[in-house]
Image (cartoon, rainbow, N blue to C red; front, side, top):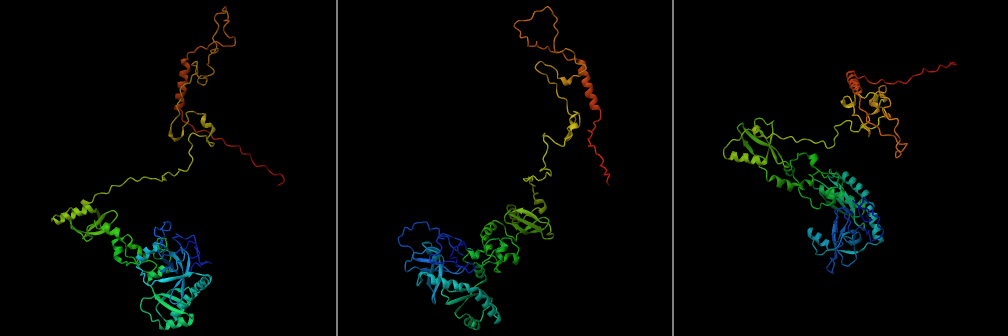
Length: 485
């Protein structure tokens, strides 16, 4: 309701204005007041030298009026002014000035003949009297309700507003029938000692003055921006395929929600392409009638008159063709045969929550501390994920094509196979040869016996049943005995 402006003027937010200049930071503030207007021409230079001399002045809640600045006082949004009233004078806050006021006056059809005038900027005494009168409004409202209840009047006093000079108090009330105020005004005049003014308002105007939060979670439209209250009937809900439930369709005022009119034009435009909801289809199985309409999917549901439990949905283009066949005197096929089976679209799991162990850390070739150290001793031991026995790797040879040492048994390794024998004892050493350099090694042929024994060992290892590795248990020592026990 308020953006923190010092001149909010609302009884729920006590005004803390100490000067008539008001808040200078609300030149274009659209949230300072109820039913405020954003001044989108504030930063635009006026090509006309003469500025429009009317301003919009706001009072308590949503009450506004237009006043003429006859003395050419420099005013801006938020200025506290003293204006003409009957009787006496009133104090309000300027809510709009400039050329945009002309548009608002034309929109509200405000007459410029004999307008009310702005006297001056409110002085310190005017503001103090205004604030003191605002503080008494809540207690006056409670006392007025007690008096009306004692007199037995069927009315509800909604709000109380004091004039700026405290010379008049206005009572806003709601009632279903006419109320006799003769005794009530006498009681009010004797109790409050001021001039009494009674104004009857509707239930929607009452909700606009009080304000509140709607079912959509936002402030009520009538108290923020809605200025005209159009009639809303139940046909609006029927056009939008809504259930006629008063508890859901009614607002805080007890009437149908004003927001039902917002999308009515779009629904009426969409329904203009639909056949009539009272359409009857003549089929070979019997007559069928329309039982439901979906505006967004552009479909109509039909059911047989004899058995209305089974519903069949068709597009409006197909329904128009079926109606054209009936007009020619032809009966259409039964609804079961005309119904096209719906193709189920494949569902894609975007969140991918099907896997239960998606948060667990999987061992992908990393070092596992809990792995058994004896597991690497048997190369043909069963591996996880049912991968079967591990295959032998091919033999790796060095630069001189020497077989790997682990592939040959140590007992059958040939003696002195690495160094060739010197068959010529009388040979002289080569002077160009380095004495520390060894002679080149000769390639030794692989013995077929070693390969045969290795193949047999692999076959025997595959035929033996695979035994799980033995677990190592720590030796447990018995507890020591206490000799002193």
